[in-house]
Length: 224
Image 1: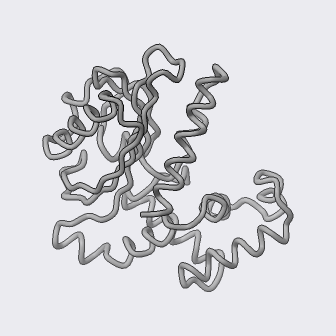
Image 2: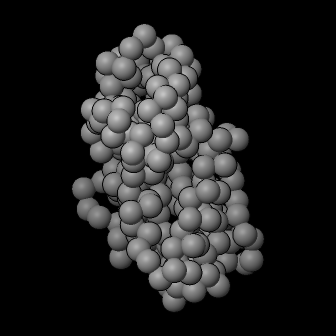
Image 3: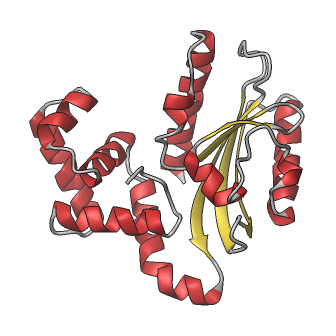
C-alpha cells in the first residue's frame, strides 16, 4: 500500500498544481493506472478516467451524476463517510474496503481521498483514487489469483517503472520511451529489466501479454 499512497499523493499534488495554473487535469487522470474521480461537495461526479467508469459506472457515464445514482450500496456507505471527513476539514484519507462493482462482482479495494477545497476551483471538492485489489467471489478468485498477484506487484512499483511497463505494452520503442520520459535509453533498458524481474517475466513480449490480461480483467486501463 505504501506505493499506492505515494503515487496517489503525487497525483493529488499535480491536480492541485493544475488547478492553480488554471489548466486541465484530464490529461493527468486519464492515463493513471487506478480509478480516478473528482467530486463536488454535494457528491456529484465532475471528472473521471475510463477505469473509474468501467469499475463503478458501467454503461452510462457517471459525470454529472450523484454517486447515489450508480454506486452499489456496499460502496456508497464508505464513499459517504469518507466524503464527510474530507468536507469536515481532513486533508487526506487512505482506507481499505469491500463491496460490489458495476458488474456486480464482489471486490476488495483501497482508496485515497484528498481535499481540493480552497485550491481555487469553484466546484471541485474531493479527489478520489481507488485501486482494485482482488475479485473475491470464490470462482473468480481462484481463476484470477495469479493475475491479482501480478497486478499487486505492478501497482506497488515506482511511477517510472509503471510508466515504462505501459509504454512497452503499447509497443513503444526504447528510443521513444526515453524521449517521452526524459531519460536516457540506458535508463529505459535498466527500468525494463527491473520490471521484468519483479514480475518474474523473461522478455518484453511476456510483459505485453500480462498487461493485456490485467486490463481485460478489469484491474486497470492502460489504453491498450
